[in-house]
Length: 221
Image (tube, rainbow, N blue to C red; front, side, top):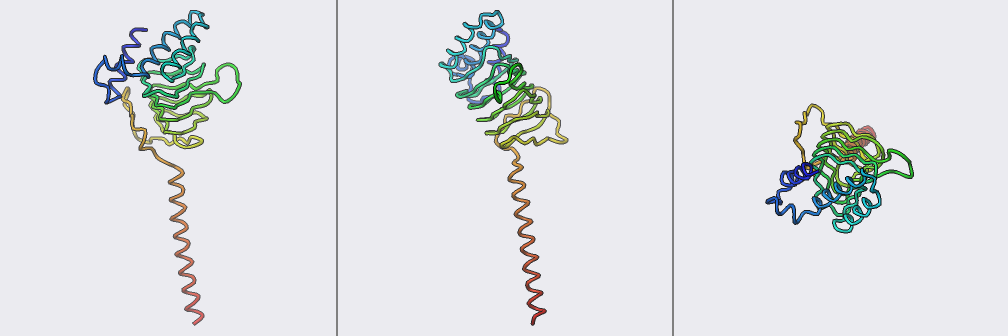
């Protein structure tokens, strides 16, 4: 567990330019505090001390604003930035070097039993307010756009935007291992692209109608 906590500290220093040193991370980062408390709660949960684990989880929620069920399995290097409002459900599995921004939810879609929450791959970035709902896999090196609602499988090396989430693949771009792209603002918008194409088509049709009207006027004269 201490090895994992050390990697969590390194993750904050690597991905947050505002983090100046280890002491500042230890004292001032609620997202880091949430991860550390969860690792303790998970340790208790694995030893069947489930009520105590849930109590630690609730204290974690009260202290940091981050709610993580004690059963959640988390890899190394998780960075929860700011953290307030993050909710992670019981059967969620999170890989290594994942970044989660405030307001994100990793949840289920109803009262299913068994595996009902998502599995997050390595090097995934989950942006502000994103909702990933259901027992599917989000592939390695993927990026979930702010406010997106993801309800189905996400292939590796891809981005997701919109409601419901639409996958935009990164064709011919090789994502280097352990390199994490934290730019979660400059994402493609397929709805905007479709509206742009529709607008250009309407303008083209209007031009053709005007030309036809001019020809009809000339023939009438």
